[in-house]
Length: 257
Length: 257
Image (cartoon, rainbow over all chains, first blue to last red):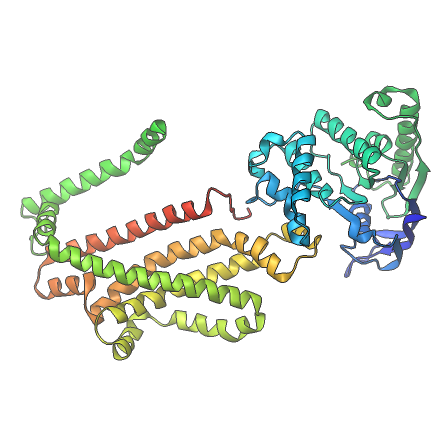
């Protein structure tokens, strides 16, 4: 049973002369996690927004398992917290808006914040928190509705390496403990390989350049220093360089920018 | 706290020194007889007059303060209500707002005689005058605040399919608060002008005190009246800031930068 199935998807914004996404097809089964890789402007965020239903495709279809759309949540590139709401109030916002607020779920919000190391920051306003903390609050807010599928748009891009590692492991833990499925946009090859069951590599015309399964027996940060892991990372580095070679317009420095 | 108070003192010190110099020079010029005291009374003379006629001045100030409080209070009530109405019902905005703008362009001094015809001499006309001049800035600013909600936050809220009412209560009104406060502060200054102008024509309060003093060539008393009206305006701004700080409970309702 596919949880999400994308068929010949295309997207062109009104008034634009070029396609952001072209003829994209892939399918994910329940529980499978996907990373989207590709140069800046290749349509990763657009694809994520289409999956969430924030925008409509110009061609092709997206099929979601019945009831999945209601059980999806989205983490933006920046924490996007409501500045006048405290940490805890930000996390329970989705409950208030969907009218599902009750004692059990509020308890869950406290639980989540505790797990994310924010137990002593409940009454703080976003402006009083570090970038890493704000992102954790945003993650708690995305998880409070108990989603089956979370879409994350480069959520850890602005974090320091240590916070980044912690957030990555947290995501993997949620995946195994809650059977959480996610689609993850990133600029980091290593992060994509570490976090996903599949990687979709887009070229800068929004076409699928590569799709492959990533399998490791277990995942912790030490995996990143094993030859098997680095072999996969190298494969992608080569693919990136090949795409560059076919693209005289871009220089190497622009690849990850 | 002490350090804060001292810093504030150091910060404001040049202004106090300048004021002292100004008053000394003024006093000296008048005492030397370089300017006739019936044209420009000395600061000490103004002070003496204020003390001597304090019961009358205080009664006039109180009456003006009441008119300002009524006029401003009513325009906050009506202005915010209209802003919400115009925001919720765009057709109402398009139908009525142009007339509000037209109304705003009519000088208060030219409507004041009409107000006297309608409301008679005394406080009712003065209150109406203060109300009319202070309505528009509150209405316009609040409406702008409601319309200029951060699009990123709006997108976040949309994820949870809120009702229009939820969007207004939890996003648009909080976003409009700083704009509304700016509007109220602008209106506070205007309400003082509106009240004094109203009193020139309808009688009562500091307006007629100043007017009567003028006809009696009591320039010192005119200065007392002017002094009291600026004391009123300053007190009003201070009150608005204090009350809003208490009502907002330290929540950072910030204008997006």
